[in-house]
Length: 354
Image (tube, rainbow, N blue to C red; front, side, top):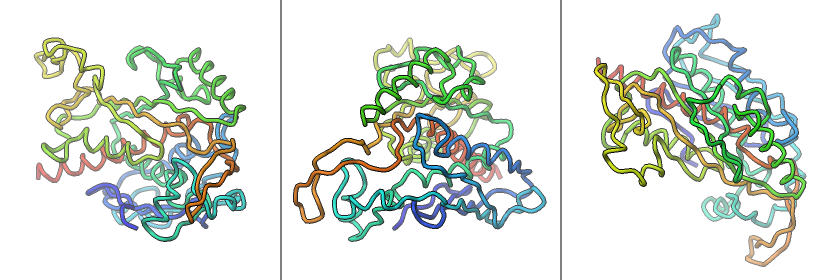
């Protein structure tokens, strides 16, 4: 199986399965001398871990990260950073009913067709549990980036949409509620809606908005390695993501060019930022902001029709512990992947300047 490595110079390789002994990763390319706050890294994992509220999966995992290499006396050594997170609360029997059948909108069928064999316990490598390794690496990337701030938050659940710009929000309120929406009134409506959907044995999707500030001019390469293209790839690699838009996004099609153009100030900044902080694939010093759309979780606790490995029609039902809406726990994942991209392109920019 290929495709387990992300990045060019600041490069992450992940390993492990949802119901295996552990998941983890090797982070290569992190410069030496970066002071690491290990508690801050664990805090990022705690934001993603299961069982943290009544509206997420009740799988109980401490998600404690163990470092095996690349860190000495609280600083990075410049060598590969190896780490692992033990799986301690697997219930593999919850998946025995799908051993020979395929769940709709999961990777079950395509894994069998591509590899001729699959780990049906929780989806194996296709499980969103793999993203915990990304959060560890992203937390390290955040500390390497230092002055750059990255804030993601839930801006929509189903049809409940927060119609405010991130500039009009107090983003310090994001962690004040289990939804991770910085608008408390909207957050309460979203939470109540998710609970209602869960009672129905169903799931719902949503949108996460992310903004990165204090990004220098010059990150990104023209043509194939544009900054926004790499961010799009990073976001679309996250489980359940179905869409990515940056800057004005799809709303920009309704504007005229004279309205959409970001006019310059004398210091090189722009009066508006419909470009989303990226022009010609290169950061321009303005805020980089984008939206990431997540589909409803595919596992529904309702009877459904499907097929087995022999092509026979069968009826089964979702079991186990699953999120009714993935976006609250996906906020730190979006931030982590953003940090990995920015760290990678920061190193690439330094190399090119040399």
